[in-house]
Length: 121
Image (tube, rainbow, N blue to C red; front, side, top):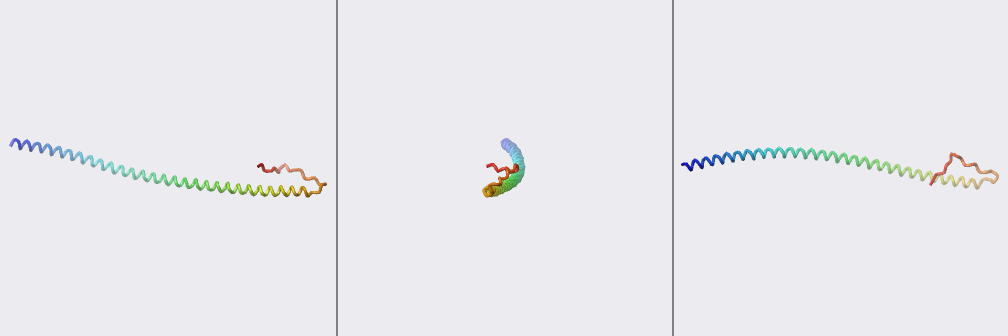
C-alpha cells in the first residue's frame, strides 16, 4: 500500500510537470505564431516598398533615356544645320571669288566688310 501511494504521488508530480511543460510549449508556440505573422507582414510591406522603388527607378530610367534621345536629336539637328550653313557659305565664297575675277580691271573690288567674319575651322 505504501508503495502504491508513493507511485501515485510520483505520477501526480510527473503529471504536474508534464502539464507545466505543455503550458510552456504552448506559450512558445503562440509566441512563434505571433512572430511568424509579424515577419510575414513585414516581408509583405518590404516587398511592396521594393516594388514601388523599382517602379520609380524604371520611371526615372525611362525619363533619362527620353532626355538623352532628345539631346541626341538636338545634336544631330545642330550638326546638320552647321553642315548646311558651311555648304551655303562655301558656295557664296565661290560666287564671290568668281565675281571678283569677272570684274573689269578698272573697278577695284569692294573692301571686306567688318561685319563679315569667316567661320573658323
